Length: 85
Image (tube, rainbow, N blue to C red; front, side, top):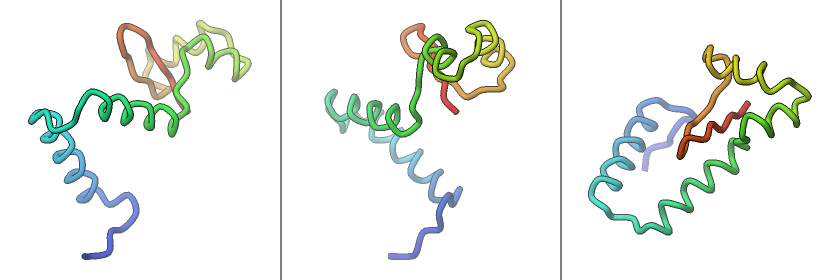
């Protein structure tokens, strides 16, 4: 097997395409998909805007503005915005 360089975009693209293919073909069960979400949330330490503001000693509206301007990474799930550093 060839050596894979860290953060190799070619490898990342292949993994992303394979993951989407697996999801589209329903090859994972519900539990597996939830576990993947959980692992990603733990890795990136996602927090709600409110929790992030509190843990970083910032005003809620300051964090919300950064999200709206694209200055902070976030994901929206079920209408709730989660941010991460």
